[in-house]
Image 1 (cartoon, one colour):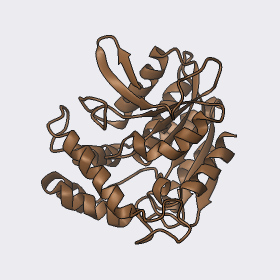
Image 2 (cartoon, one colour):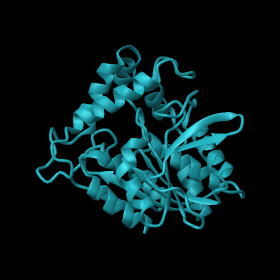
Image 3 (cartoon, one colour):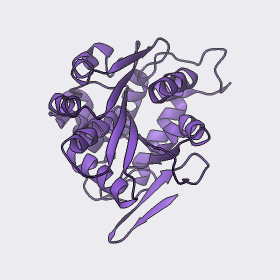
Amino acid sequence: MNIQRPDLPTVYAYTGGRAPQPDLPWLVFVHGALNDHCVWTYPARWFAHHGWNVLALDLPGHGRSPGPVLPDVEACATWLRRLLADQGIASASIVGHSMGSLIGLEAAALAAASSTAPRIDRLVMVGTSVPMPVSDALLATSATDPLKAIDMVVAFAHARLAGEPGNPGPGTWHQGASRQLSRRILERAAGVAGCEHNLFHHDFSLCNRYARGLEAADAVAAAGRTRSHLLLARRDRMTLPKAAAEVGRRLGAHTHLLDLPGHDLMQEDPEGLLRALREALG
């Protein structure tokens, strides 16, 4: 659905096939760099049909949400809190992947420091690390040759060249689907305001610059109002599980570790991801 906001750009959110209902808890999915809501289709639909109001957002300048893009993680978190407040949402749980996990963490820290709604009840950081550095080579390539940079990320984001025989999407080519999604979002965002070079470079620069993640984790833990979980992949080569250990310790988070997938957990192990999310949010 399109969320209309007076004097502000429209925001697109996938609701999992069900319109929001009164008195149900809210669950917000936040995608990662050069992604959009569609990476959450499977879990969003499940939760929408099992007692939750779901918003799988397209961040500004991504997918179906118009720009301009926002300059940093802090601005994205402030935008997210205002969006929820404008919808009259008093409390919500946030699931964020990669860049989206940093936005969720920062939004939870903002909520922890505020006496006003919305409150963040649960935070699930998927495929995360704090900090989240990006190599100079990838940033430089993304500025000058974003299609080559997409291929680099696709290669690193998947643990396997092909799905297992029991993959719920027989015939699915994970790498090809991931490449096409990134290319489509890059093309759709061509010329969007706020990008120095392109959306790929913008998003990965945003992850690379975010420096207050551990401070945010301390604030969330000190407030004691948010139950935190890390959902990590043992074979993740982009955000190594060990690189999330400190933020998990500071949050007092429960860690769920999946054996099969790489960084693209939603695509490579959708059933494992859903089981872990049900445990975290149950």
